[in-house]
Length: 183
Image 1: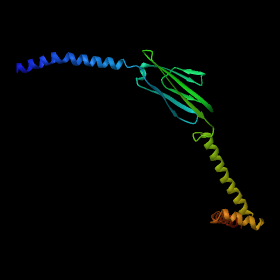
Image 2: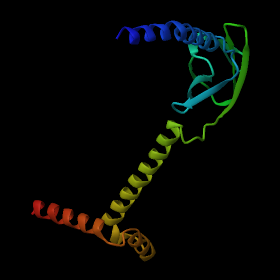
Image 3: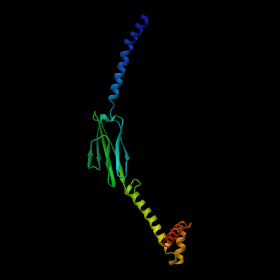
Image 4: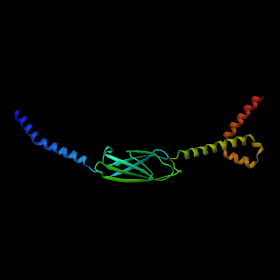
């Protein structure tokens, strides 16, 4: 039993310093990595709102950031959320590590009104569709109420719009109910 403990202690004394030294060298090598690359990642959160962040080979806590928007505005933050007006914009980033290594990147964005991300465009389209539907129903109801007073061509055209005749049946049913109530 003593031989086993002696061999174990001897092995520990001989090999442990080497593994501890190797771990220290690895840890120092990991900490000494310079900043090599940093790229802008961006996401469009809504029509003119963007969220920017950085993908780098070092953790974000070890870096300094400087964002420049259109050579006018400067921000020093890790991530950036910003509203950009219509037009062309250039977003630049300057990333620096604790050893003074600097990496630059930029992104060019073109923001247009006619975009599928534009909520105002969708609301305008929705309003047009609703107006067309309402206009159709108003014209159809006015036509059915005054059907005998319009020309034959107008009757043929309007009957094409309602080929199944269910709108006409609804209005005739309602007019019969009104006629019974008056009597």
